[in-house]
Image (cartoon, rainbow, N blue to C red; front, side, top):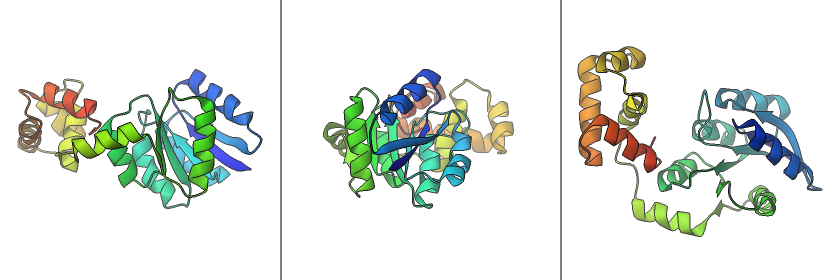
Length: 199
């Protein structure tokens, strides 16, 4: 049996995935989590063969958890609504074995799980081509952190406090990110970075 952990914050989607995968003769869903910060602990508790992770989760993203799971010998498949080239690139850099979009039929998901366990990489060819054409994110890790925090419109002072940085450092990172994204302000830069999957 292939033991699967599902990390998905939408309860109906999580339950549907577990139910549908449970109908497969060789797949058993051994854990379900709704919060990204619970992924590693759940994996350590149940020892899955495969972790099926959404990207945008409360607490911690599936992309951030992927590298930790890979270090534990768990095969990671990213399952997301957003087929963004930047997300694909970050997933592969984190060691994910595959990147799938949620609108694919469940039979394809079950087949992808089997193929990933067998050592294959599973990526939609059109998305792979788009990721190669898009190139890597121009943002540094710190610029990405500052932009992600700025997406809600927080003031410079609030960002500095939240990120434990000086206000001038926050301004410098935001200015650099705006320049690299060729946008007019931090809100546009954050939107563009999010759209491209860099955040």
